[in-house]
Structure formats: structure tokens, C-alpha cells
Length: 96
Image 1 (cartoon, rainbow, N blue to C red):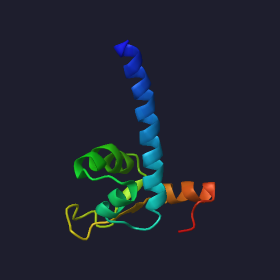
Image 2: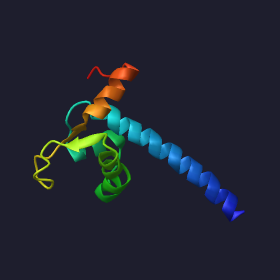
Image 3: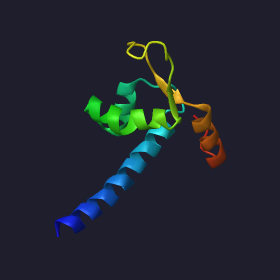
């Protein structure tokens, strides 16, 4: 029983994560502060946002820092990479 529940929750978690990730990509058509993205998503826990969404999107090449030399700057924002912008253009979602 627990195994079936675990499998069902894993599928649901993957779906929810994909939906939230898509929202982050869409929202970052303009450069945004991390707290702006979190507010848009209704997230309050910075560590969860960083680990589950921001870091994977950056590692996958979809999101980048506006000040990569200073990752902890109070002026740090996040924006789509060329790859992310190209995807939105192909989907017809590139108007900000």
C-alpha cells in the first residue's frame, strides 16, 4: 500500500514541479529578484525555492544570474538564458 502511495505521490510531485518550473520560466521573461519569483509562485521558503527550482533551472541552462560575478549581491536578479528565450519564442510566448 505504501509503495503504491509513494509511486502516486512521486508522479504528482514531478507534475507539480514541472508546472512550477514552467511558471518560473514564463515569469523570468524579464529579470526578476528571487523574492519576486517566490512571491509570484506563492512560495515562502527560500531554501526550497533555491533547491527545487532555481538551481535546477540554472544547471539545465534555462535561467542565469544577471550578476554572475556576485552571486550573493542584493541586486542579483535572474533571467532567461538565450535557450529559455528561444523556447518561449518557439512557443509564441515571448511577449513580456
